[in-house]
Image 1 (spheres, one colour):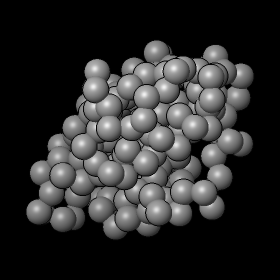
Image 2 (image 1 turned 90 degrees about the horizontal axis):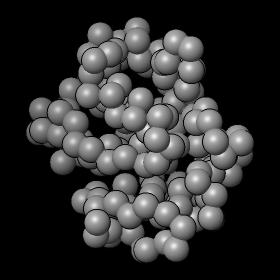
Image 3 (image 1 turned 90 degrees about the vertical axis):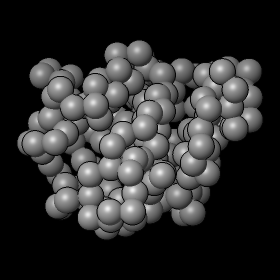
Image 4 (image 1 turned 180 degrees about the vertical axis):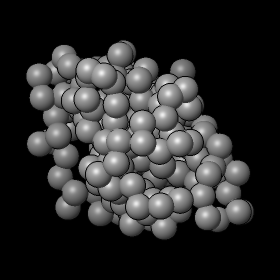
Length: 155
């Protein structure tokens, strides 16, 4: 695949439209080095101030699989249909299985690889049709995904 992010000798290449997601992927890729994925401790919010308003951090629970909103960037919070911090996706009607966002998060957890997808926009601002979501895995042991680092660009 072609990528707007610089090629890495160690990892996947993604075709990303959103500058926010391009920067998020470059940061994630830099932080992981030649590991499969970085750990949460590698992510320093002070290093990503420009994109931080567009970031989500999701905790991953394995059994049963679910995703909890740990951090929601200010720009993302403006566009949400409610206050999701601390909620599990399974508690949010349009995000619980079998939603597209749920399936995308599950795929990243299963494969341990970043995934970019366009998701229909559900929010307060009617001028956006879709969002380009970039979901990137984080792992404390470089094997099991225990958190997702997500950036979102509005299209």
